[in-house]
Length: 62
Image 1 (cartoon, rainbow, N blue to C red):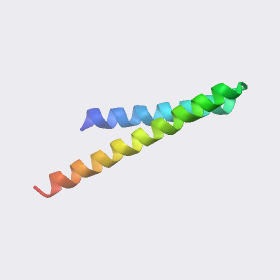
Image 2: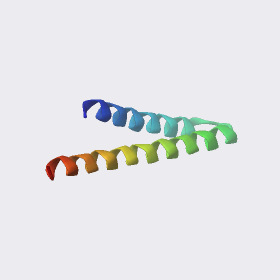
Image 3: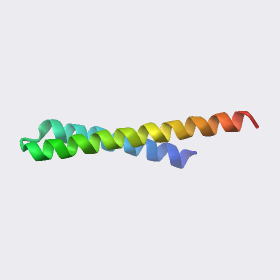
């Protein structure tokens, strides 16, 4: 579980970094690219969170 939580933290940090780069980019194409990356990483983090919650629920029901 610690490994999964570490990956979740990394996804969140990467999403935040992409959002920061997006906000600082002066080139429109780079802004759009980093906006897409930030959104995608946010979705991945949300999916990992959901999987963690499902695993916790399954562990409690045993």
